Image (cartoon, rainbow, N blue to C red; front, side):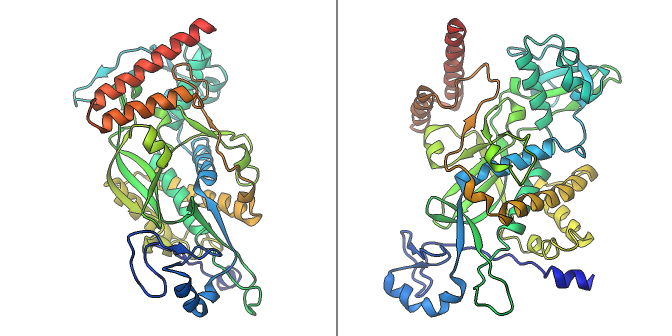
Length: 444
């Protein structure tokens, strides 16, 4: 053990600049964001005079820093969560182990349940191996209107459940691999030269990131529940009132949100990940569900998320302790207990043994993926512009349709001014989609 610790010294989290409105030298707090150190982005100053006076103190910590823009980096997070969905250690969804004997096609009516909730009830028939369901979707769901709907339902089922351990694992990996880096001078006698790697959004450093717990606005027809006809067992689907997504907060105080868990609710929006998985992950992961809500999207689209709580990962002292020996011995029993405690706190319940097993394994895989990416600075090759895709979408407009985004922006502004309700906004969007789908059918 001691030899292992000698080879892999304990890791520490080097927290980034938390507030870009406070001068590093004089401590003055300004209403507007101050100027950042152009070399490292780790300090803010009132003016050049304060920066010059602070140089002697700041110089040892100021050095080579790769600042990765969040808009080019987030597809790697999405790809990693897609990798989790295809992990063989993940329990197979019950609907992918049985024939589908009902018709959950578009337009099917949801079912009301005694607890007051409603969802599309999917009837499960005879057992079927998942491999056959994936290779022979016509046998798996014979009443589907077409192959596209079969593929779409498979993706929705593959994405259901275990969102929380997957999200925690990705953020744990970023903390352990990205934010354990710090600048080391090439003149240092006892350490090798090292670059610092940090995330940013625009020109502002990311100061914090973590998990948001809340509710997703989901229609009943886009939810699923399951009834096994062989053993008369009712299986509830994923609950949009217990939803999780990622927040990133900049040093300027701006929040950016990343939601990778909506595809199970028929929100079939994804990003191309080909350029992000060349070393970090298997090359077959070329598309992953993801929706980044930055300032441009917030202006154009209605907010489908309602936040109830948020939990920092980057600035959680207990989680930092769990990364100390991640490179040498991996997660110790004490580290695993820390992870489970954090997951229980976010969930507001004691998580299952399956969730505990998954989060531990996925944390290690996330660390490996980010380590491989940083090892050769693969992030320098990430495209600056993310390609947004809607795979096999037969209901909605293409994501690059300017008329669609213009319409969304117009209706969202009306909703914010109080001219229409949330329900009227949702119906307006669905009407636009129906009209678009009808036009597409005529042109086909």
